[in-house]
Length: 85
Image (cartoon, rainbow, N blue to C red; front, side, top):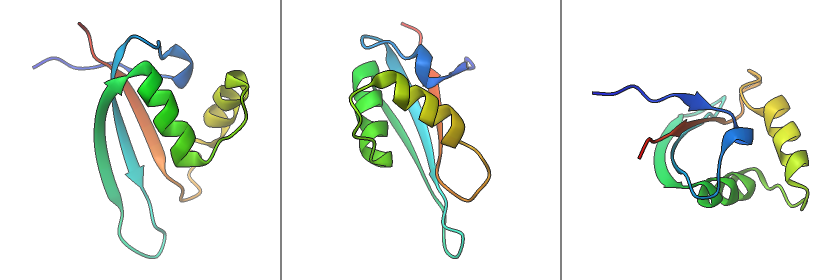
């Protein structure tokens, strides 16, 4: 079995293949976990839809995502892993 390297959203390439692990956390309820696989463009689209990001500037998404993701305030957490070909 091979270990996958976690990458930042800035490293996602449109034609790459990725696993995305999402932990949806509810402070006063159950947590859910999802594991998804898709291309880089599908990953970016999925994350934008999940977080409600509508700005067209992708750099703004990267900055926002780096500041928001995993900040310990009880929100969802996303991990992106590149799958080698």
